Length: 268
Image (spheres, one colour):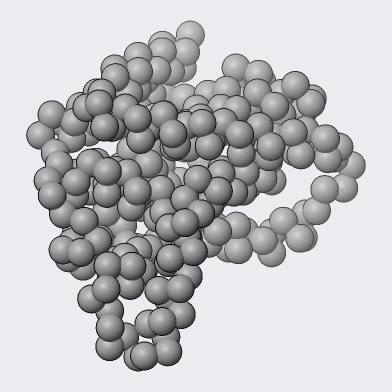
């Protein structure tokens, strides 16, 4: 992998991780176009870049969550009805289904090599985004959302282990379908990505330590990290802006076009 390829793939990851268009699907397609083999190490590095971007973008929320978690631990969950502490509990509940993802992830690894599967999955993402934009949304926030709502969002996130299914898109749409307000659906989805990406890194760390970076140039990986961080931050701001303007359906159109292009590419 060259430095330029590292930057370009980092940009793809950064924009598509938070835009509801599937980062895994786009990384697969971009790698196929560049004729690059699957690189798990690079994938994890650029995911860490987007993890850093969401922490920076939501740093105030992250600090409140840390304080809330500490408060819950010290008082034995007696004051869990405070909004910041309720959000901690909701995010924890939504993270639980990822345990299933750790089990089935190895079963879907081969799908990352199939542009046909990615194309079909992007069409599914398109349909979900369009439906959620037209019929989803409510008034629930951290003050009145329920644990079943959070679990529903968590199981939607689980679907993102398949390439072409957007993590942000599935979690935002699930939040809208359960009655989250548009602002809270976006905020909850992005905050939920923090434990998801961090957990994935910890889960794969032993394999990374075993394989290492022997013979690999670090420059593309460093460039990919920072380009994904910057582009991820810009994508977060863009999603928040478009959600407020009820313009989410445009991502649906894009996913449909990308999905059809991927299917055509797979048949050539």
